[in-house]
Structures are given as structure tokens and as C-alpha cells.
Length: 288
Image (cartoon, rainbow, N blue to C red; front, side, top):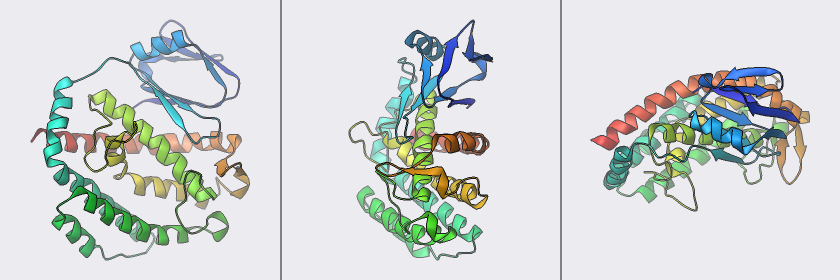
């Protein structure tokens, strides 16, 4: 996906002659799939409609960076694929096992990059022998807790409290994990919609109050990559304690957030290539 990040205060955005005008800069609409809008950007509803007609989705980021909204065309795609997705619920356990086993394998490889070796043979055996999706979720939860006890040791203690925290995040590392998990989850949702999937119908995760369960399924395949990306931001000193503010949780300051967009853009280009490959795998499993 071709993505533009617009996160500049008091920026005026309009659509003129099939191009997006951002202050004095123009971006042809044909070069865009997604536009991420940050703090205090001004965009009228008529221009949003023009963009969605061109197949461009909008991700609207809250001021604190703790929530996002998607603006996507109301036109539905690929009813046939949706029907196949619903019918494949009879094989939800098989597909859920793929997501969870791949998560375990990829997280283990991530730890190995940092010279921490885990024996996951028993975990993979449990996944293979499990008869219920709910049991799989328990296996996944136990493994994630084990993984994070090692992951947080990559960082100086001043950056974390040693465990996963969210809603709100309680330290800089958790703040960045939550932020990029949220962002990638929404980008996955947009990509699934573009292929014609129903993002709310998952195989591992269950729909709940508008939760995009299928997007969460796919997220499990990329969390280790995001975790490494977050580690790199701190390890390279691009982010430090002083870049965060404490307001009902720990959140990245606006100026610091603008600094990391270019890093995320490069990271996301690689991620999107992997996502399309995984979508093809799951689409094939659904059609079998």
C-alpha cells in the first residue's frame, strides 16, 4: 500500500483536480492508498468523499495517539469471498492453529536474534493436539507472557516496568508497543477490506463489540516484527525517556511522533509485502 503520513499542526488539506493538496504540496491521488492524518489537520467531508471514491482510505489519529478511526468507502467488495470466509468457520480450529503456531515460531526466532534460545517443542505439540480454539488462546497467552519476560530485558530498566501494560501503557516501551500495534492493526483492516474480506469475522479471535477479529488474527503474525522495530527506535536513541509525557498513562510527545514516521514508513513497506503473502495463504485455506 502507498501511504502518506500527514501529522503537522494546523495543516489545511484539500482535493484539487485529482490531487491531494497539503499546504503548498500536491500528491496525485493515484499515488495513494491510505492517508494517515494526525493532530489538528483540516479536511472537509466533501474531500473525504472524493478520496474514498478514488479508493483511498483515511486513518484518523487521536491527539494523544491512543486511538484511530477508519474512513473507508461504503461500497462492499467480493461477496463470494465473504461467503467462503463464513463457510470456513467450520474449519476455524485448523486456521487458528496456523496463526498461533506461526506467532510462536516468529517470536522465538526474534529472541534468537538477541541470543535468547527457547525450547518451544512442547508449545507446538500442544497447539497441534488442541481440540478447541479457546484452549489455543490459553496456550498463546502463556507463551506471550513467557516471551515478554525476555523481551523487556533488551531495554534499560528506566524505559519499562518489566511487563506488558496497556489501556493505558505505563512506560515508554509499552507506549510504543501499543501505538504501533494499533497502527498496524488498522492498516491490516484497510488491506483486508481492499481484498474483500470481512475483518470482523476471525478464526482465532472472536468478534466482540465491533472488534476486527480477523485483523487481530493477522496481527499475531507481525507482532515480533513490530517488537523489533520498537527496540530499534530505543536502541538507536531515536526515542528516549524525555520524548514521553505522563497524562493518564505514558504517551509519545507530538514532536517525537513526527520524527519516527519516516522510520515507520520504511518498516511498513516491508511489512506490507509480508502481509500480502499471508493474505494469499489464508485466502487459499479459506477456499479449500
